Image 1 (cartoon, rainbow, N blue to C red):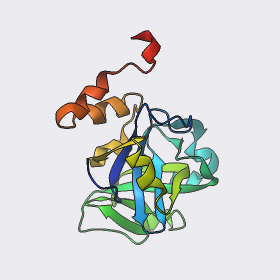
Image 2 (image 1 turned 90 degrees about the vertical axis):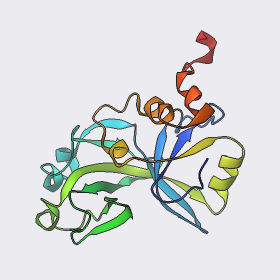
Image 3 (image 1 turned 135 degrees about the vertical axis):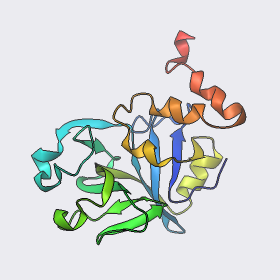
Image 4 (image 1 turned 45 degrees about the horizontal axis):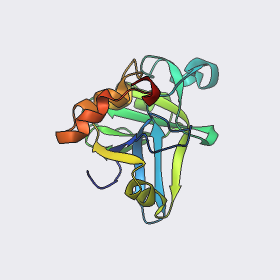
Length: 185
């Protein structure tokens, strides 16, 4: 297991009982001594981007819906993006890991357009107070694994949790075959 830091993924384990995070994949956006912040990658909503952020409609990746980023701040939005060229970061882009980063949605779209290979918008986020995430990891609620830049932009996110686990080394990959409902095993 790796240390939790920005750009890493959290995969909910069966021990995590919070229904907000059951079988979720969370991309960590910020981790420091004050806490951690991330977005859930595998919870698309039925709300179309053009219904709430019309200016971003032509830039957002398919599916062109908002994603439920987490239970905190659901009236706000965060945008995760992948640059076309790591050496060509536009105004309003903050790098996380390599070409992956955040886009300030207050930036005029015309300053960003053409610089991004992918963009996904999340309503809300997942947040943890100081040492809270470390405690949850220590109690076995989360697997901490490296992210691949494509994880945040998959069109079909239904199998993302399993796909990320399958590519992990050793016994961790075995968890990808567990049934979602252990009673059916």
